[in-house]
Every structure is written in structure tokens, then in C-alpha cells.
Image (cartoon, rainbow, N blue to C red; front, top):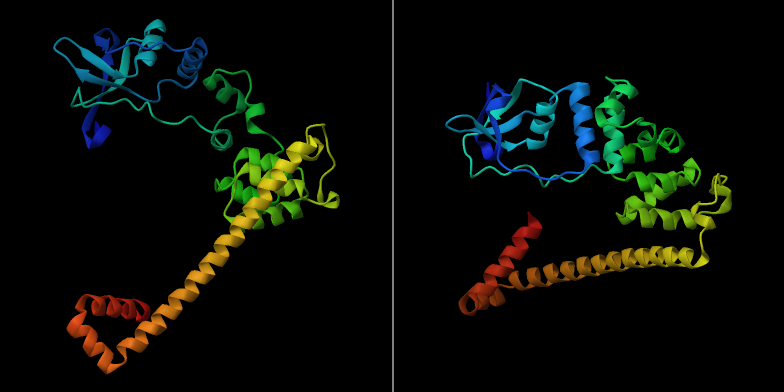
Length: 285
């Protein structure tokens, strides 16, 4: 079997005796991280093959040394590997960002369609995944908020802010966020703070947004006001720009429709005439 590997290079997949594998380099990792990888290997096996490069008497591991060490300790005799065609040009995929809380929650929910919670927890090396699923959070959100969350418009922190207000107010807040094109948690919190008491949900603990210090409330409200003013400024600026552009087009058209003026421009200012004609062509097209 051969597949496209890094940088479009062809890599061939085979099972290789573990005694023929040689680590290219070693890196220190936290015990907690190693334990998680080991739990995953024991629960679901090796999902991602090792990347290796053929040597005279074996294979050099380009990526997957930690998995190799764990499999070696587990007594595994052969390991699925992908043989890379180049050695020096290979760069391990070390720049991938960690999953956000929102992404992790979605991944776990998707996994529950095929596996039970215990199996997933064992694969991740933890006792339970319940606290990562945030059970009940989506049930408290307006359907539009759930849709925005699933579309990755809002993150899990923003979703937690929204559940402090009633569903109809959540919808209003989402509409304001769409209008301002600002889906940040800070902006959402500011809108929650501006929510009338009648549209808030009954506090279940002492850490709801409106029980925080007055100074922090003022800061959030100020940021919200600044965002609204910024929106008004850019809206006005765009309207002025549109008006000026329209006036320019009318002026240029009047010049070019005057035969004498157009003839003079063509004879003495050919470059300017070309610019005017391009302006008119773009507005008519």
C-alpha cells in the first residue's frame, strides 16, 4: 500500500519488526501525556502508523518515537509503518494547535455515536468524559445559539455566557453579534450585562456576570459602548465613501460626454483619459 505523505511524497505502508526500528531522536514528555498515549494504544490500538526511513540494517523513526517506546514496553513484535521516501526533507507535524474546549466537546459528542463513554475515557487515559461534555449546556441554549455553536461561530465560553439569559434574549444577542460581526466572549458578556432583569435566568450560583464587581461591569459596558460606536463610525464612513464615489462617477461622465473636453484630454492627458474610461467601464459593467 502506498499513499501521499508529507509535501505530496509517496509513502509505502508495511508492518515492520520492532527490533528493526531505530529512533531518530528522543524527546522528554510529561508522564501524564505518556500515560494518555499508552491508554489510547491499549484501548483502541495504533491508529496513526509510525513514519520511518529505510537504513542499511533497519528503519529510522522520523515520527512516532513515543509510540514506539510504549509499544516496545508492551511487548509488541511488529508495528505498522509508513516508509518515507526522503529523510532530511521530513518535518514532523509538531505545529498542530491543541483542540479548543469547543472542538473537544464536538469530537466527544461525535465519538459517542459509535462508542460508549467508558471506552472513550479509557482511550484518553481519564476516568470520565462527563465533565468535558458539558452535559445540559446545549439544552439551555436557543436553537439559533446551538446552530451558531455547531458552526463554530461562538465558542464554549460564549455559550456559557448566553445561558445566563433567557432563550429569546440569547437570540437577540446573536442578532447583535451578527450585526457587529463580533462573536467574542467579551462582547457577549457585555450584552448579557445589559440584559434587563426580566430576561435573565435565575442565578444558580454566586458567579453569574451580574454579581461581579461594579468596576468590572463598567469596563465591560464601556467596551460594549466602544464597539457600538465603532460600528456606527464605520457605517457612516462607508456611506460617505459611497456618496463621494457616486459624485465622482457623475463628474467623470459629464466630462467624457463633452466632446471638446474629451478631445482635449485625449490629446494632452491620454493617461488621465484612460483612467476616466476605466472608471466609467467599471460602473457600467
